[in-house]
Image 1 (tube, protein in one colour):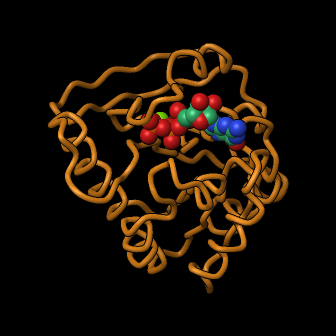
Image 2 (spheres, protein in one colour; image 1 turned 45 degrees about the vertical axis):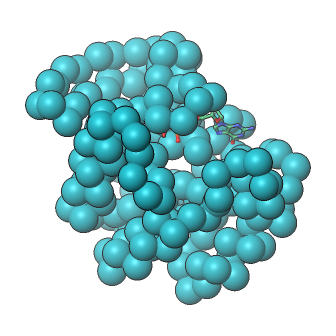
Amino acid sequence: MGKTTFLINFAEYLGAKTIEFEFAFPDGTKFKKKYPCKSAISDLVDENSHKTLALQGATLEIPVGKGKKKIQVIDTTGLIDGIHEDPKVRRSISQTIYEVLNSQMIIHIIDGSAVTKEDLPSSPSEVDFQISQIARLKKGYVILVNKMDLPGAEEGLKIIEEKFHGNVIIPVCAINKKGFKEVKTFVAYNL
Ligand SMILES: Nc1nc2c(ncn2[C@@H]2O[C@H](COP(=O)(O)OP(=O)(O)OP(=O)(O)O)[C@@H](O)[C@H]2O)c(=O)[nH]1
Ligand SMILES: [Mg+2]
């Protein structure tokens, strides 16, 4: 959890005051909307899962050497094990998997605080392992262990480091932008 929060706050960290999203829904509907970063958070982030049901693309400017490079980052719906009961969620999950297969770089976000909690959906889940198998074949694949501000996240991070050994793993906190410098360096290096 925290994909949308990460993308909006990462844009802000890189100096953007506004963020323009291009929404692409599974039924083919497409539109663009520009938000001040703060309103993007209030409109597009929710504590309940499956808030994002479209591909949400935004252009970010990453400093590379003395210049800047524009990259297209796509926020997606969350993947789950098994088959979701809501067809809308199922369609956006298949849209997400298609996008994962076709993207150059994958930023895979796992909730570090949920690993040791029994009342939350299992983290990392089977689908996280499957995604990592596909994504590690790409030039740029990084796992962000999010919610490092919450209790249990340090322990969760250790478990993820063992289970996903051999991959690049960066602990982050998407709400307070912790770890973002390391993410920026990773992205710039792998462009
Ligand atoms: N404590 C804490 N909460 C966070 C962090 N990142 C995100 N959240 C919260 O987690 C919840 C879900 O955040 P989203 O950014 O909507 O997560 P998402 O992965 O986009 O979720 P879906 O679009 O539903 O798949 C919100 O209540 C956020 O405020 C974090 O680093 N720490
Ligand atoms: Mg989201």
